[in-house]
Image (cartoon, rainbow, N blue to C red):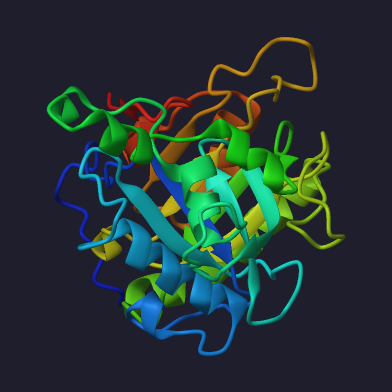
Length: 292
């Protein structure tokens, strides 16, 4: 455990996670980013993806919906292709990896572009009741069109647990210092349990595989280390046919130190139990927020 970091050990952790409907985890191949990730990645596909998503879903964007908060983060996992016109990303809790996302925003509705991606994957399947006064055409535009998803290559993450560690040193020193230490310990412990490393062989799903990556700011740097564990929908307990109690869910932990990693792997990833002392919150497969 690195010494001298000002970590908040006083305030309760439960309920301190950001409420969100989906998390888009953009693959960058970098291990740190500018404080505002939309200012980073000039002339890269991943940088253009972040900026495009902020433009479409953020303040003033055509798909801004306060009841459909999309958490956009970068990850150290490398993109499938390195160019300025496409990007790769994970989607949680839908447990998907999309290797090629076009980052252009084009005016033609029938052209596959970033707008197509947003409409096919990120809009809500059903609008919140507060939108009941919207005209039908606007409601349709603000609702997901599943047919558009077929235009993309999609890898469903059915078996591989995913561990995301906030390592945004460009935003706050605490996560920047803690994350590499936690990353190494998660890799060591998971490998000791028979899991291959995150994306090391270009694989993102398999019964004996785990995805591990650093990610950008998710809120609550004072609770470093911050870790999100996504348990895939078809994962079982102990390699048997028994369904995993946390299958399809994402669990947020705070104040994680290297000495806690073994317990998190054994209890949460392998055993399906939440470690309440570190629990910040969680998300269900349908986007519902979990609290103790």
